[in-house]
Image (cartoon, rainbow, N blue to C red; front, side, top):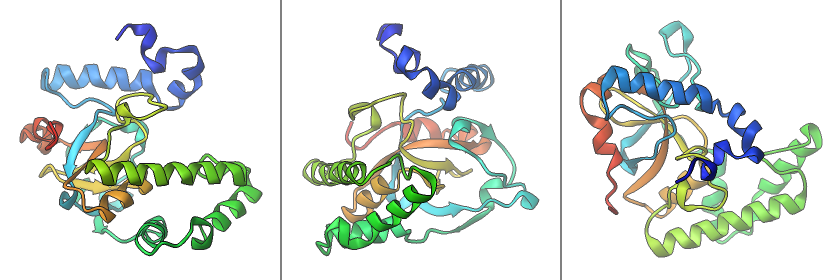
Length: 230
């Protein structure tokens, strides 16, 4: 790929690249390589996690050394006990909505999700990237298309294979990687995660957030780079 074909460097993506802190991620990648060698973790890279290994939800607890990690910190390697601050994974509202729609056949507009977004739009002007009812209808038509494509293929495609691709797995299912190489859920990509669970997929592509130092030293990253579909 020529540098001019790299989405973060295209003029129309300038502000998006700054918001996603792509320059800082570039430097983090270089520092990781100096620290851990050529196989070092990369920011926003796609990892393939067995669905069963997404075993808990990260709990922010600064007193316990578990700060709020953001997507912009993707690829950060950190030791300590932050990965022990977890809660059991619970079914989110979006999961219940997706299950009602895809399993029970409830139309999107009858699940309550449109009303919820419209209230947020009325208050803040935007909700989940949507500003109008038409935006919501287009967005959830896209979720329908994603579900059908995933059901047919038996796999959830990584972001690089989807329209609007930006950088690696940026914007995908967001997880942290604990010391044992397992994934800790931390929001982001909820519709994709719900679809994977409803279809009981063997694995999901994820965008890594913070990665525990022991996972890197234990050789888990190369394993997570391999997909069962390769």
